[in-house]
Image (cartoon, rainbow, N blue to C red; front, side):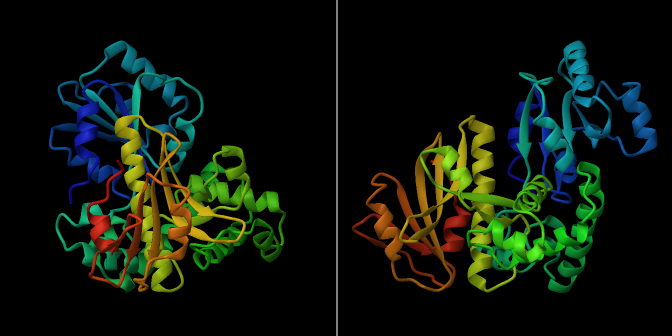
Length: 374
């Protein structure tokens, strides 16, 4: 299965170090090995490969050198900076890793001006629709998520076994690797609570009470789960960025299959993942800053998603499972956002409708198949 990032990565490898991060088992190594050119693959976890890396004895005739888990080397950023500054490119340097690499990448500026970053997320409907109907891809993602192995398998029982092992590895290996956290059971319990609250603003005080910890501890754990690519926040939109951060966020799962609740919550999570993937792609290929927010006013009227580019609203999106009547909340907020695209995505409809207020109602699969950020 081809991944959308492949062409962009190949292009950038001609002049920059490329850092490829993302959740565990999302397909980073597979993508790296199917770029269509000869490569020398080395994994820092493997002792023979580690020796080659430390002595810098990789194949200089290979167009691409893939260094997997290289962030586990001490002072890896300074080391790869020295390689780049001394030898340059070619060969192209592709570095892959998961949560720890992404966290370390954000600290310091050792590689400033020398690299481009990409984040690989689970399979989107846009990627899957290349080889299956969009409606089938959406239904499969809602049931077993978009991580490549369970998605391609397409079996719910296999997925549940895979998910348990996947989460165990994250919480018992990656978490301990990144943070000194002892209360793993409570974090597991919080994950289960969040699975039931997808699509709703999360009350930090409510979680703290249920878990019998402080609000600050809850916020810290949420940040850890974000860093580990388990969840991602969607914050309320406000022109004042500080105010939007202080207000309660909604949290979605990278693994849509993990969502507990009805089809509406699963569909909303699938849309959130596809939007985030598209925003990351736009940001990393154009350099424009993007964000995914939601709208909510004092009267508690709410619209599920607002997409911004360079802090300017571009798309307003409401998600419904079966309701194909135009959302009153969309109509209300449309008065404040005159020039942006307004969409209502419906899971159980085959019809496309519009009205004079420039609001488009369309099947969710149709939109996600052709999703683009303008």
